[in-house]
Length: 270
Ligand SMILES: NC(=O)c1ccc[n+]([C@@H]2O[C@H](COP(=O)([O-])OP(=O)(O)OC[C@H]3O[C@@H](n4cnc5c(N)ncnc54)[C@H](O)[C@@H]3O)[C@@H](O)[C@H]2O)c1
Image 1 (tube, rainbow, N blue to C red):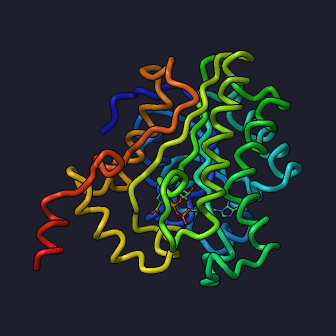
Image 2 (tube, rainbow, N blue to C red):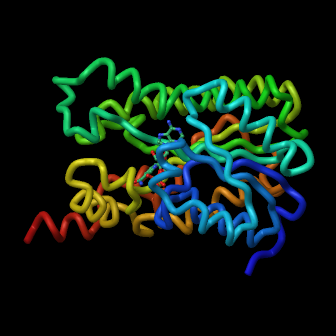
Image 3 (tube, protein in one colour):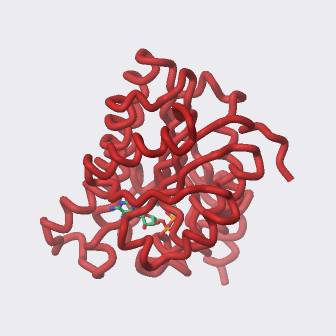
């Protein structure tokens, strides 16, 4: 049961593919907290996924959009304001995909067309979302726009491949556009850096199971779940976080501040 902390708020949620998706859990939580919103995903993902089930549960409309297409995004923002009957208070960018990672390409053997795709889909699309929100004048005063990222933007995790650069771009865009949107109409822009999570995007990374387990042992609180991440996003959409902007917020059970843990020492001395 929610506490209605998003009562009356309107938004767009990108990236709910299936029930494991962080965006899926966020949509359920946003609904429970009294928000109304539009769900969106790439047309191909809509064909494969189960988003209509989620839409029914949340009383939400689904509007397809490839997040790399300005035409799709413009249509999405304009239609969303029509459907929801006004401007938006929140947007969640929960999008990630690397053709190089998906096809198991080594970092020293990248396909450069795919590299550009990775950067566009997983990084620059966030700028496209923000710029389209500005150009369509879609955001209410004190709105909140969030994207999801991973600590490989700061530290090297070899199997994360070219996604590391995409996430570095994404986090940088949050700072640059955060400044701009704050001045425009007090809209805040942040990223959440989430623990490894068992989703389609997550498990696409090589050796994910071992890596998930390692991160769990390296985090004093353990890995943050997708539900925990959804709760954090909801708080960031609420009026309780109005002065937080241009931040990369670690949501990782303490992983990013840990040198080593007893669990890892135990494993190494076995
Ligand atoms: N799962 C993890 O371990 C983990 C950890 C940290 C951050 N993240 C980030 O969380 C976010 C959500 O991923 P998830 O783990 O819920 O996995 P997911 O696979 O459920 O979600 C990724 C989504 O991106 C969408 N997408 C891909 N290309 C798109 C395009 N061109 N236009 C619009 N949408 C597109 C997919 O359809 C899918 O819905 C991503 O940014 C991911 O990088 C995930």
